[in-house]
View 1 (cartoon, rainbow, N blue to C red):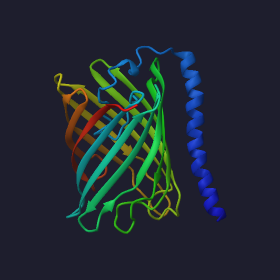
View 2 (tube, rainbow, N blue to C red):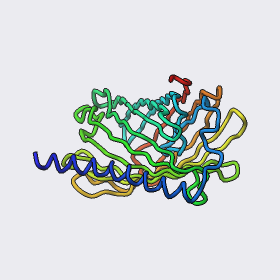
View 3 (cartoon, rainbow, N blue to C red):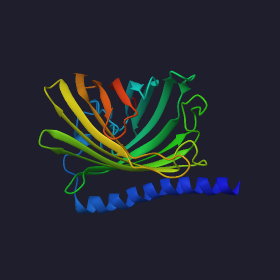
Length: 277
């Protein structure tokens, strides 16, 4: 019981540290750099895809607006290993700078039963726009629940707390998103690392008013413990298609740079429903 309480305390300490960091940075950044053309001034019904990249941008859905992002991914591992993943991200603007999100997934490994995966909830808070050093800057915190099945290969069996620092900016005609994040997990470390870092660098642009492109490099440093993970780097790339300002489609591929165990194809969509309150 004492061990459980200590683990729970560590999780909430991490989330609390993220909130405290957001509050401190918010006061500092606003004092250093007044808002210039905030993202909220854009058409609120325009979709803001975080798909298909691993990186998250610093933008938040407009207050009262609802947005869905859904996709499917086909993984090919070593030998004959295969897996099909489906996921949905729901985003709701609950203030001019705050976004509530919920994430759900499902997977169908070819050698297991498959089923629902782990689900998560969290908040993204935009702290600065057009900051001289950080560009558009946001902090995102979330908690993942062990709703998936370890036996079926759809979950880690752990409760996770994560904090993500997000910097976005435009460099000429190219949009850049940089993320650094950390995830802390409970459990004994046998199903997933107790702690894990993530870094991403995403780049995007437009071929035309309706066709765009995305390239991203992301990676996970190696971990120790019972569940050792080697360092890995991945490359993601593909086109995007703007059907309407509120509907964006994407397709593409993920290939390993220093992690030869996985290749993937993906497809999905981002749909801004509109104002619901």
